Length: 343
Image 1 (tube, rainbow, N blue to C red):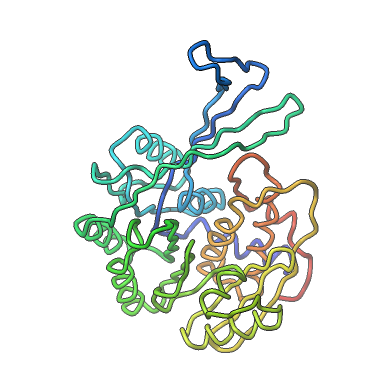
Image 2: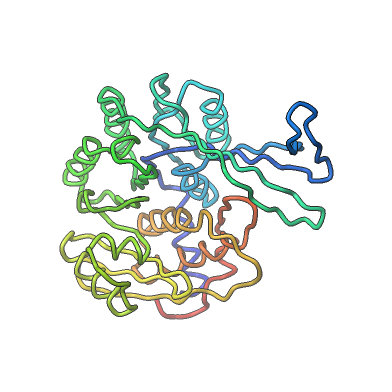
């Protein structure tokens, strides 16, 4: 893809509206200064003094972060937020992102705000070391009333947006936002509006998802189709193509050091290799950056190959940002785009 074509695609981002439906969480980073280490007089245990706290949107919020960094005009997070301090921080962090409106978030006392609390040891060399996390999750089924409120918010924005990105982030089925009831409404909305781009990604599996655009990694594809052994590169392409034909929707598979492959419902196939590493990496957030860029590029009219090239470059940007769940903006992505006449 040459520079002119890249600019033509990304210039459309400022006219797009995209909804993100799923499990929003707060990434709370506790920056620890090891030089201020103490021993507790009361317990005799080490005390880690926190010198700074960073609160960032995580989970589905990472997709929102990336869409905002791309300059998408309007972004609608649709999810559940607890009436607690973490919920206040999450809503504030989301609301500070350009283009983001928080009116479709459901505040409720019936759920805790999903939180990843990440202690970070900040060494004098500048290196940050992540210690064991403290997570706050919900372990009971999401009440039907809250599921209905989520569906209502989705219905309010579905006819205003160009794309919907779905992220199921929870470990236990039916305890988050993306429940069977919500997915049934997604299925009907996708049927009602065939032009709506709907992309799904799931922490566990996309097995029970309606036929929308699937994004996953090789291990998730293996689990989805019930393969007993790891899929070879050729098997990934073949399996993804069969799934795209079955769902009548494109399928995208990330392959780490082998890059990404994509297949369309009409049999088109494309592969882009991973870009060379440029130093130490942190893969946290790379998959969400891919989801955001797939949604924006497809909604902007990019071809299958162009979409893969953009999303692959975005992932490369993000993995080189250490100690944070990073994002990639259009300028950073452009720096890594292959200069080619091929599309």
